[in-house]
Image (cartoon, rainbow, N blue to C red):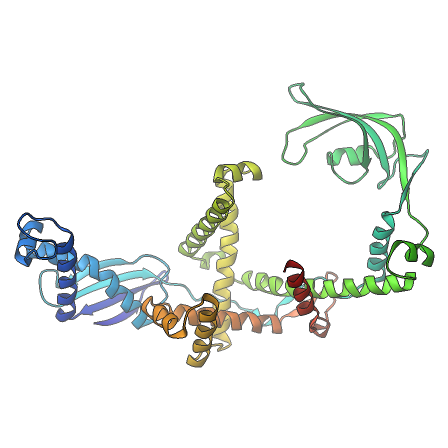
Length: 450
């Protein structure tokens, strides 16, 4: 078999495949054996039906040959894809150009391929991540959260402020006049947003003994009118921050020891968060360099279908139907697909952009690296490198595996070369994130899960 390819417009390639007569004969014999083993003709045992009889039953030799070509062309096409190293992203349009009745067979296959996109500016990206530095205010806030466990409520006779605790009687009525909520003596933290945002706004400045009416829509609900009566107003006072309090309410003998431990723990967490945010932010920034018009719908559709398939499997494992899932999440099927399409489009942009960076930076994958990847994958799936290599080759996935490995190298290159800045725009010293803290945290998490 011999194959060549020609680049067309709109990210399409035309493969021209020529199959020798001997290969066609092999395919034809395979079809004869397959049909002969399944067809039932009086007077003949399965698998022993003469070829002439089969031809007569199917409408002649040409009909049998057409059946053989219909079965064999996909395999010939797949081999041509491997030989020419193109990267198809859709089903091909196949047209037989010669050999339909006898002799060698030639056919054309026009297929859409993965495009090469432009990512101009990829080597000068600024990426915003949370600062890995722990501030004094952050430490104080964390210690205050610890102190709140021992806080006490004190009645106050003043206008309500954000953060106060108020005792409320609440009656909620829907637009039809039906009572949908009735709660007495509800201790509510002003500003928490647990009822509706309008309540947190309108209650400010009132005092105990007063009432108000607010309208709002609770999350996932409908418009409700709330009649609210305020019984009393309290503020939460925290215990004095002293060594005595620290010794009595923690494992530390002093506030200084507590502050040191809180700062160390927060530093570890911020480094982990920074490392995780760095990768995600870098990939998102790279994806923004890809124009929407350069994203093939075929790739997005395939990604959406894969995500729907994965969601279906996960729901099935939990004995949840898609209808139950939609009801629980408060969305329609169209809204689910729309959300998945947005995520899928982003994923496709990242894929295309990483391939472009790999090409631009010559981050190819040689045979030794490919073999190392196969060995690693074989260990993961409990197979042997020899068997896995044969399966990958037969399936024509060698090129795809090289591309995935190159994308990994491109992502590593990108993360190492972006400029990191904090929320204020100040550049972050990369050395602050180059630590084994993340590995220690992951190990602690693994030990806890075990």
